[in-house]
Length: 317
Image (cartoon, rainbow, N blue to C red; front, side, top):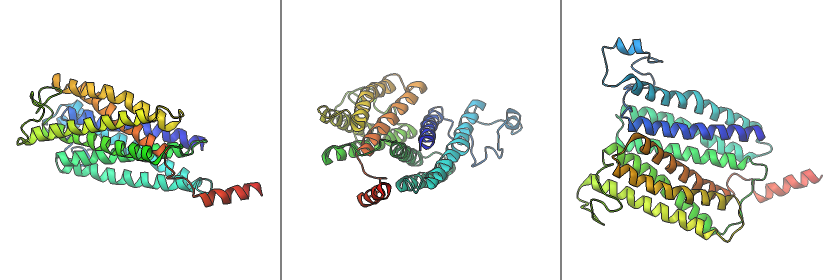
């Protein structure tokens, strides 16, 4: 189980890198630098000579390689790691049946995500396809975090009230929608539809007849709701024992403050790539922390009480 948890941690890291790499690919307008899928200009590995032989493209070579490496990381690193984890979970099924079900879910999400990656390219990186692609990546990350949590030797649900547990789940869901809406906003060209902050073009409620302003303003409202829910979750846990739920909630609350400041920087500085990438990274960390808080208070993936009792009786025998 120790090796499973370590490998799950490595997979979580590479999944995080993969999500940020996808964001950088989008921010540098490299999403269509490989116009076909799964190959890139018909090549398994797009070399400088191979690209030059095409007679030139609309993209620099670094853009082509950025998209290609994004695909490579998914297919040659994350995918195989998930497959290995699923096999390990199957071998551990007699000791931890819930873990295998979690990893089967993760494997299915990887397969779906691969198809969505191809669809995103073939649909020419439409805003909706980019948002769905990112949403599934975040769901996949959440499932990996659940597997990592359940593989812990002391993993048991935190004793938190149902209201707090529900608040963590709602906050995580709103955070996911917020991150996805940010990707849709950016891909639609609405990142600078509101040129001032915290108000939109100097107005508390801007002209919503403009679809770009509506999209941008909607993202800000979602970010506000997610931030308030996150801070409220952390505040509601202040008097409780410092368990996994509280630690994860505090992490999310700490990062969300910086995330709001970076959101302002994206607008006021004209969406530089490094701030956009960092903004996405912090958004993923906030979501992951909230998902971890939710999982820490959940019994999902644990055997039923009856199974626990039966195993205990067998051990005592």
